[in-house]
Image (cartoon, rainbow, N blue to C red):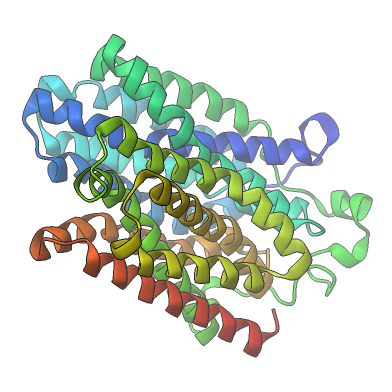
Length: 410
């Protein structure tokens, strides 16, 4: 788990390695570009073609828990290398989907194996960076996880406009296999944990994990899940992530059906959502280091709630959809950047890998929003109810964060 010093002698190389791991996780996560081609060739419905992504997200979230424990017992580099080989295997197997024409096969190859790979590698990002940055935890961690948010913005258009048209679905999977394998292997050389000597050299003894200068306590996972504070954190994460994932599933269709946009214009808001999901993370991380995590969360979540409440009534053209997408991108970006830091502040860094893995299961449960939003839309014939539900849950999340701040003095 530990190494004497970061590669290149600077702790910022650990942030770069974390960014690369997150970027490869996001590359696999940007699944939507495969939905239409699979439907055209194999006759799958949109909901059927989205099942591999739903399984990927669920497995990804679940694996974060044991992956955090494995970090404490084994060398982190080995864990990342193993994840690299799983990425390679997942995408090579998925390249045979047209030959098998089986959804179950793709669920296993891409959803299960790919989800395990993503969980193993992504679980190493926040803990390693957080250990190296007791002084700027929000900024450093958010820079690392920023890769996950930016991946969809950069790679989805590349896959949709170049890779799939020129290389086909099978060739695109093989290309992804090569990219994820090589980049993840390179990142494994960068993401290391510090030794006590590293801490003393960089920060002095007051920043060691057992000193008050770094964290208030180091809570074991078994102790954490028995605390009311944990369930408040977990619930606030679940409620805010529900709305963010809901909008991923319905935004393009909303643009075409309600705002009457063509396919190209309807894709602009979701691209902006992905972009600001990524670039918002270092900004909110930087601000949180100065005014506190809960204050940033409450401001962003309140803005997200307002957007959801206004959505069915006032978001009816391209301009208003773009503005809404930017604000909602800040919402999910803030959540995914700040919850690992909040977890470390409340429960310590010693068991952060497993502790945040448990908190991150809220993301897996929130993944049902993608399917639930489409189901409610089909059931009611309107987007109003799922959007209003998302707004209410955003308000509840903001209230929970306020309660955490007031009671536990974060």
